[in-house]
Amino acid sequence: MEVKLWNDKREREMYENLAELYAIIKATEKLEKAYIRDIISPSEYETECQKLIAHFKTLSSTLKDTIPSIERFAETYKMDCPAALNRLVNSGVPATVEHRAAASASATTSAAIVAECVQNFITAMDSLKLNMVAVDQVYPLLSDLSTSLNKLSILPPDFEGKTKMKEWLARLSKMGAADELTEQQARQLHFDLESSVLLLRAL
Image 1 (tube, helix red, strand yellow):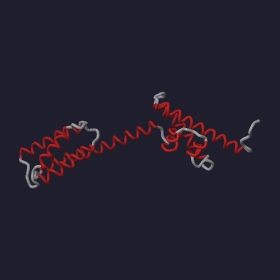
Image 2: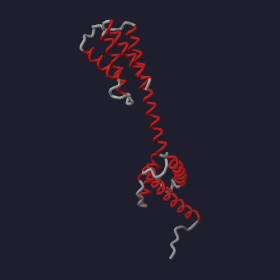
Image 3: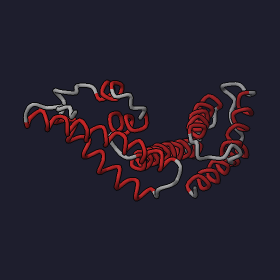
């Protein structure tokens, strides 16, 4: 005996939309798994994922009164689709787009820190040119510089600028606040700063 799920056209449309929503979630889960396992190329994945996300947004908007929670819908119909729910409900963009955004944000952050490091190098060199050679004048500048260099994750641990600043800070910490660098020390420090900033700019 055939069981009729709807009594009128409106109910029929609702059940068809629910079936469509179910299919979109299942398809997205399969697509996510295919992408993770390298079964599909990133460009194919992105195209298909964008289509599914667009269909999902339209459908979930249409069904928002019937289904206020997509997670509850998935739970009710025992859908084990965590990757699909994450992509459709939480993220709203394909994984490839997310990765590009993360890489771009990381590059932007690095560029800002490089600029900060270069600025700190220039400040330290300018101070030496102005004959600010007392330990309590030089130490804070090199300390700021060293801190900004340590924030820069793209630098190798043995980056010359980092090791040289560490050596200078160790040397200065053994001196008194009012002690001054000799002319030879000031020239050497200026040379170390200059060669390090050139290496940094070459990255």
